[in-house]
Image 1 (cartoon, rainbow, N blue to C red):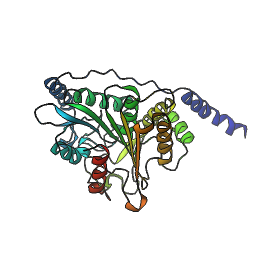
Image 2: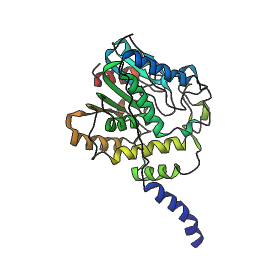
Image 3: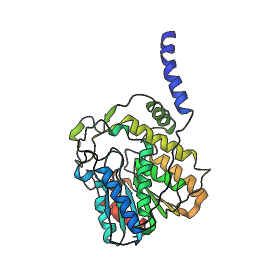
Image 4: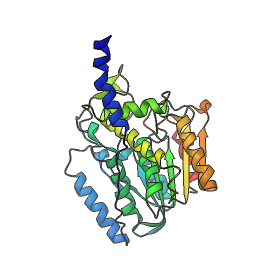
Length: 319
C-alpha cells in the first residue's frame, strides 16, 4: 500500500501544479485599414503557407469581389481539418455578395496526414489563426462575422471576449469539453497531459488512417493539441462573469447528435452569458432525430447533411 501511495504521489503533484493556473493567451490586433492592405496581408499569409509541405486543399483561401463589401466572413476550420472544410459554405456566402477569408491554422493541411507536427498545435495558434483572419477581414467588409467549428469555436469564443470590432460571432459545435466526461475530469486530464510528452490517438482506432471522410483531414490527433484546446476553454469559462462581450451577437449552434463535444457544458456557458448579455446571445440545437454530426460543415464527412446545416447557418447570420 505504501509503495502504491508513493507511486501515485508524483502524478498527484503534476495534476495539482497543472490545475493551479490557466495559461495566459494574448492577441494584438493589426487590422487592415483598406481593401488593398487586406489583400497584401492575405498574400503574406499565402507566402507563409508556401513554406510548408501542404496539400493543395490545405492552404488559406480568400473569396472576394474586387472591392470592399457590406458583409465579410472569417471561417475557422476544425483542429484536424484544413480550410477546404469550409470552402463549400464560403462559396455560398461569396455568391450572396460577401467577401470570405479562410485562414489556415499553424500545422494544419500538411500533405502527410500522419505527420508528427500537428500534435504541437497550440491554443495560441488557434487564436492567431482567428486574429490574422480578422485583421484581413477589417479591410474587406463593413460587418465582420467570425465563425469557428469545434476547437476553433473555442478560439472564436475567446475573441468575442477579447477583441473589438467583431459584429457577429458563431460557435459551431464548440469543443469546450468532451462528450460524456465531467468538466472537472477533462480539465484535470488536459492540464496534466499538457505537462507530459505528446502522443497521438486515432479518431477511430478500428479504422486508423482508413477513417472515412475527407482525405485532407488528419485521422488522428495529438494529446498536446487537444489538451491545449481545453486549456483555452478553461480561460473562456473563467472569464464568463468578468468580461463583457465585445461582439454584438454571439450565436451557439449545436447538434443533439454530437458525440464529440459536451453540449451540456456548452449550454451552461450559453445560459450564463444570456443571463447577463440578454438578446445578444442566440442558441439553436439541431434535434437528435436529424442525425447532424459534430462536423456539420464538411460535406465529405459521413452522415453530413450540409443542405440543412448551411441553411440554418445562413439564417442565423442573416444571409
